[in-house]
Length: 291
Image 1 (cartoon, rainbow, N blue to C red):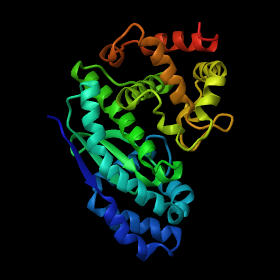
Image 2 (image 1 turned 60 degrees about the horizontal axis):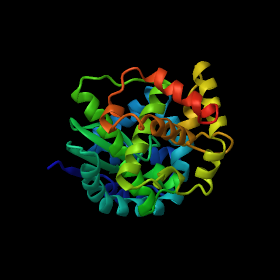
Image 3 (image 1 turned 180 degrees about the horizontal axis):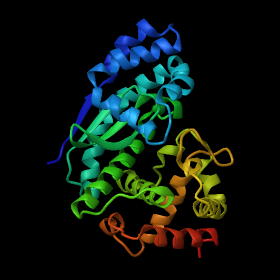
Image 4 (image 1 turned 135 degrees about the vertical axis):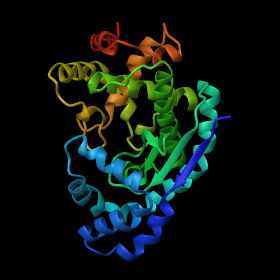
């Protein structure tokens, strides 16, 4: 039986926080790096690399965007922490049953610098989901429904990478790959928890309805962006939006996967080779009205 091991780095942050809460942001950041993250050097390096890969200065992002809001978000971080501790095991067990996933994973819960409420990587040489509580609180994903969805979504990413790794299939990059992987993970979230599970919509009233009503327009906009080599961040990034709505790419990705699953099972969807032609064909159909 596969296991989900929890690495809980948040209590150490809560122990440090009272001593730095009223200090200047730069001092808070130094304490976060040299005192808090000192016990998790691998976790620190991964966060730094997350920004370096995009050519960003992690200190500047943390100083300008993350740390100025920490005080107001700590209560939400505490709430999210409690629910993650109680939900990771049960949702993982359900994912094993629903997806047929056989892989040990590590769930790391921590206070970070904005790399994501949930992101999949490796930690201590094991498949891992990193849960950034600062981002969960920012998004309002602090209750059990949103967090169960987030966990299931990230487990979908783990399953995807695990199955592709078993067949020596490489990961990709770029907007088409992101549309594919996020759509697959959203498919898994709903396979685990039910078709109504859209964790990114939990604090955005009307999100699903708006995406559905503007599906063709969104699909056409994504196609134009991809053909112009524009960044896909407006469709996926938590600090970006399209017409005021965040993370609409998850809706589009799920729509594409939903069209493909009529002729494929879960493993076939996970092991696709030529991504762009398939994604483009289905997205063009959505742009044309779903024909």
